[in-house]
Amino acid sequence: MSSRVLHITLLGHKDLFKGDFRVLSHRINTCYSSSSFQCDLLSIQLTLTKHCLAINSRPPIFPSTHCEFTLFLSVFHLFQYLPRALLRFLAKPYPLQTLLSLLSLYAIQGNQNLLNLVNAYDSFHLYHLRSYWLSYLIPSNKNLVFDLIDSYTLNLSRRLEHSRLSPKHLLLSLELKLVTLIESSLFLPCRSLLCTVSPVDMAYIKPSSSTNARLHLSPQGFHSSPYVPVPPINGPLKLIFFGNLSYHPNRQAVVYLSQFLKYSSSFSPLNISLTVAGRDIPLSLRSICDHSNIDVVSPVSDMKELVQSHHLSIAPLFDGSGLQSKVVESLIWSRPVLLTYNPFSALIDPDPRDFFLFNSFESLSELIRLIRLSPDQLSVKSQALHRYAHQTYANRNCIDLISSFLLASNACL
Image (tube, rainbow, N blue to C red; front, side):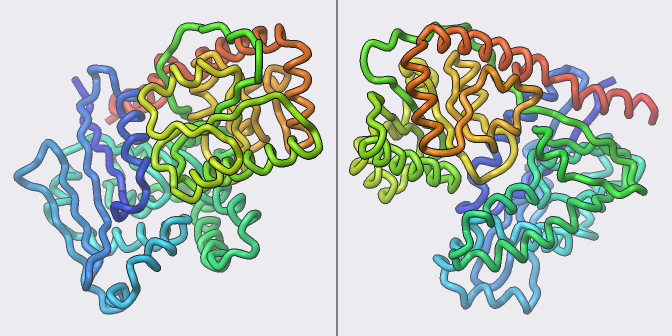
C-alpha cells in the first residue's frame, strides 16, 4: 500500500527565495522516487499587497479545492506605506523569515479547506525553518519530515561577521536572536524526522527533549557523471567560479576574486585565467569583472561542459550555510575545487588531503604555484574527489534515508 505524502513549502514574494522551488523539486524527486509514495505539493505563496498580506496555496492535485487565505491585521497595513524598494531591501538578506512564517500560521489556522486537506494524508514533509509553525497544524498521529535544509543560525552568524558597517546589521542581529531561540529548542508535535543537508548545520539544531523528533543527516543528491580527465596545463591555469550571481555570497565571492587578481598582479604574478559563470549577474558585478579581466558567461547553455573545459573551479565563500551545490557539482564533473573553510565544512567526511583549501590571498597564491609545479597531482586528486562525490552524493545513495523512515512509521500506524 502506498503512503500519501504532502510536501508543504512556504515561499515568499516573487523577489524572495528564488531558488527554493528548484531545491524542493529536486529533493522530492530524489527522496520519493519509490512507487511506495504518492506525493503532492502544497505551495503557500506569501505576497505583499497594498492593504494586506495575502497567502495563496494551490495544491496541484486539488485544482478545484485550492485554498486562498487573506490575512487582515491592522498592524500590517503599514506595508502599504513602505516603498517596494525598501521591502526588498529588508527581505533579501534573510531578515523577516521568522515573521513571515509566524504570519502564515495565524493566517491559515482553523481554515476548514486546509484541515480537510491535511486529514487526507499519512505523512508530511515541511521545508525550511520558516515552515516550522505549520507543523502545529499536523495531527499528532501523523508522520512528519521537517527538512530544515540548512541552519539559519549558522547562516545569519556568518552574514553578521561581514556586515558590521551595513545598515542591515540591526535587522540581522534581531533575526538571529529569534532564529537561535527556535533552532535551540525545536518541538515537533508528531512522530518526526528532523533533517539537514550537512553535519555543520546539524550541529546548530537542538530539538526539545520532549519532542518525538529524531535528527537525521540527509544530503542533497546529484546526478552521476563519468570521469573526464583534466586537460593538460599548456598555458594559463584556467579557473572557474559558477552559481547564481544574484545570490549575496556568490556576489561577495566574485568581488573577492577581483581583489585577488589585483593582489596577484601587484605582489605575486600568476599565469591564470578566471571565468565567472551563472545566471542573473547584476550590472555592477559585470562591471567589476570587466575591470578585472574576468571572463563572464551569463547565461550558460551547458554548465557541465563549461566547467569541464577548465582545470579547476574555485569557491571563496564566506557567508551562507548548507551544502554548496557548486562544490559537489564540480567534483562530480571531475574538477577539483579551490575552496575556503565554510563550504568545506559542509561536506560529509571529506579527506582534507584531497582538497585545495585556502584562507587568504597568500595561501591561494601558494596553492596555484604548487599546482603548476605538480600538474600530475591535479589529475590524481580529481579522480579521488570524483569517487568521493559519487560515493557520498550520488542520487541513488540519498534516496533511502527519508523514505525508509516514513515506510517504517506508516507500518506502525
